[in-house]
Image (cartoon, rainbow, N blue to C red; front, side, top):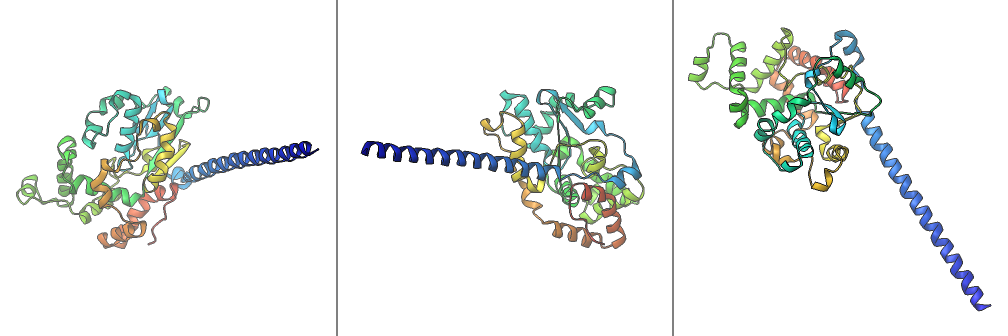
Length: 320
C-alpha cells in the first residue's frame, strides 16, 4: 500500500511537471508568435503610399535605382545617404563569401561597383515582370532616412569632410557648379583663387532654387518616393536609419547565413565621422533648416517638395 501511495504521488508529480512543460512550451510559442506579429506590424505600418502625390505627378518607375539579386531573391532600391554603403558591404559579403571583410567606403564604391552593376534593372519587360512578380515571394525592401537629416548628411559628407569621395567622384566640381549657379558673377578661377567653399545656407538656397526651376536633383538628396517608385512597388519591409540598431539585425536575418559569420549591420565604423557629426533629433534638424534658410517662403517650399517622403515614411511633417 505504501508503494502504491508513493507511486501515485510520483505519478501526480510527473503529471504536473508534464503539464507545466506543455504550458511553458505553449507560452513560448505564443511569445514568439506575438513577437513576429509585432515585427510585421512595425514593418507593414511604416510605408503609406502618398496617394495625392501619386495622382498629381504620376511618376514613372525609376528602374535605374532598383537592384534585383536573383540568388538571394531580393529586390531593393539604392538610396544614397541611407546606409547604402553599409548595405552594400553586407550584400557583397553574402554574394562573395571569400571577400568577407570590413572595407572602408572607398572600397565599397570603387572596388565593389563592377560586382553590383549587373544587378540594376533596365527599363524593359523583364524588369517590369520582376517588379510585379507575386509568385516567387521576392523580398522587396527599402532603407530610408528623415528627409532633412539625409540632406544634412549629404552636405557634410560631400562638401565638408575631406575624403576620397572628392577625388573618386568629383565632388569638388559639383561644389563649384553649385557656387557658380548661385553666384553668376563668379568664375571657377575666382572661386579657386579665394578657396571659396559651399556654406550650408547657400546649399539649402540651391535646393530651393532647383525646386523653383524644376531642375533635376542629385541622387544624394532627391525624393526617395520618386527615386524608389513607391507609387508602383509594394515594399515588404522598410527600415529607418534612425532605428538601424533595431532594424539592422531584422534585415540581416533575411540574408540567410550572414549571422553565423559575425557580420554586423550597421557597422558605424564605416561612417564614423558622419555618425558623430549628425546626431541631431528631428526637432533640432528642422529648426536648423528653418534658421539657416531664414525665409519662411523658402522653408515652406523645401518642406512641400519633400512632403511625400515625410508622409510615406511617417516622419513628423514640419510646421510652417
